[in-house]
Length: 311
Ligand code: UT7
Image 1: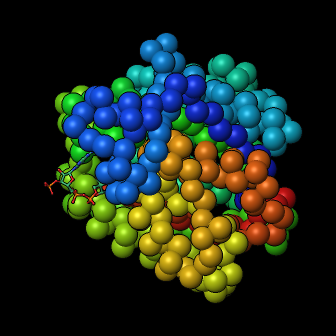
Image 2: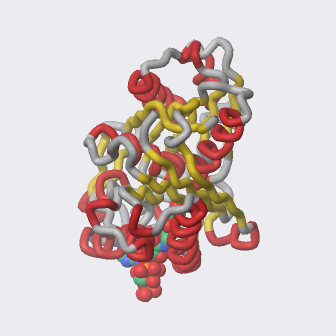
Image 3: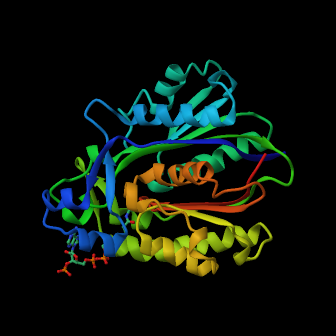
C-alpha cells in the first residue's frame, strides 16, 4: 500500500506587516530584508487568534479538498513549536473542534521541519494498514515568541498554518522515498530562550545551504529518479538564497521552485504545507508530477520526501 496526499489546505491571518512597517519597529530597511532574505511582508495573527485557530481553518480547507469529513480521520498530527499551551495539545483541541470522533491526536515538536516529521510519521501508519486517513497540520504563531526588539530575528518570521490529509493511493502514486535527520549539537544556534527566539543566523544558514540541497538530491535518487526529473520543489520558506541553493543543486528551472517567502516570511512548520496548498490551488502541481518537499529547522532537524502527485 502507498501513502499519498488526498487534499491540502492553508490559512494565513489577515493582518499584513510589510518591510516598511518593520522599518518603524527596528533599525532595518526594506532593501536589507529583501536582498538578504527575499521577504517583502509577513502575516501576523491577532491577539484573540491562537495557533489552534490558524490550524483549524487550514484543516477545514484540507478536509474539503480531500472530500472527507472529520469523522473519517484516524489520526491528527499537529507540528508546532507555539502550541496554545503545553497541554491539552493543539491536536486535541482540533479533534474536539473538528468533531473527529474516532481520531487519535498528538503534537509533534520538530520546529520548521515539523510538517516533514508529520508526513513521514503518517506514511508509516497508512502503509502498515493501521490507519487510513491522517490529518497533518503545520501551524505556528511565531509572533508570540518573537523578540520585537531584535532586528536579527523579528524581520524573518510570520504566522500561518498549512494542512494535508493523507491516505492510501494507487501503487504508482504517493510517497516514493523519505529522509529524516537531527543534529542536537547545533541546537544552540536556533532556540527559544526564556520567552524569545534566539538565532545565530550565519550558523543556521551554513547548515541549511548544505542540508536542504543534499536531502533533496538524496530523496530523488532513493526514489530512482534523476535530479532534473523533479517537476516541483517545495523547500522550507526561510530565505530565498537557501531555497535557490536547493533548486540549483537539482538543476531545475526557476518556475519549478515554490516561492511564497516574499508574502509570508518564515512561518516555521506552516511554510511547506502553505506552499503545497497554494501550488495545488494555483495549478502548479499536476497529476503524476514528481514533487519534492524539504525542510530544516531548530533542533537541528531536517526532513524530505519525494512523491508522485495524485491518488
Ligand atoms: O527556519 C529556520 C530559521 N532561520 C533561518 O533560516 C536563518 C538562516 N540565516 C539567514 O537567513 C541569514 O543568515 C540572515 C538573513 C539571518 C542574515 O543574513 P546574512 O547575509 O547572513 O547577514 P549577516 O548575519 O552576515 O549580517 C550582516 C549584517 C550584520 O551587521 P555587521 O555585523 O556586518 O555590521 C547584521 O548586524 O547585517 C546586520 N543585520 C541587519 N541589518 C539591517 C542583521 N539583521 C538586520 C536587519 N536589518 N534586520
